[in-house]
Length: 365
Image 1 (cartoon, rainbow, N blue to C red):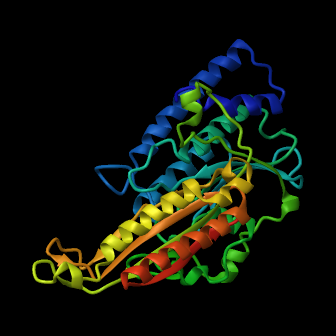
Image 2 (spheres, rainbow, N blue to C red):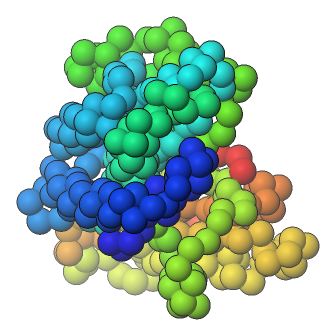
């Protein structure tokens, strides 16, 4: 990974037509090493002592944002934090009114994250701009350059992904401020607790017009095993997957583990297990997949399971789990979502259980 930050550096060197002299290459190596050190520092900026955890608006997220803002300033950028928590760094270049080249990635993490996820795109972009600045090319660059460290991409806290980038794109859901985290706090109250305005108007005003953006570049670590398994060091994104997140609740009859006969049970746990296996089967073998080349890259994940009351000697009264479905073909994804929902309802009917399926979040490709 030490060589990874060089990728974006070389792209910007070519854009700026800077000769890769021996001095330039030495400077690149120095900035690469600095970038790696900064990635390690962000990897230790965590809300947990045991693993990397930096979720939206958490104390560690605020600390990380301050670090990134300092590094942007060190690279010669003017910086600010917007009203949802994105960190921006900008240089206007030779023509401040020209459409800007945007770069960056997300600063938040999942729980027990990898230190390169998201952070690599931010730190690499800062290193690239610092290279331009050190060569005296940043202020004379043909267009504005702006780096954005997006505050929320993972959607861990509010189960609503892409809050930061959706605000910039102007596609935030109208009801987003009323979404609650597990503690019951709404996005609105959480923003205000961090001294943000937390109003719909304040979020709407974050939108960038398409005419103001020339392009967007992001370096990101491969999060799957495909390139690594093939020995390919670099890949280009050809498609973006749309995503649907579901929360499934199966309701049965709570009872004593030692006294309720097996024949009289309405246990939602075996029902949930059967439903989860059916999700995997459909996402692997549904005939619907055949209509799209490569099955539209469909992947399905059950990442969370909860039971109530959650005791080893109690038949649970309710079991809930989440489903994350992604595909590059939106119509295929929606068809599979429908098949998954019908399969789960059929399992519940067969077991005498009731079930609810809530669509927590969806995002088109």
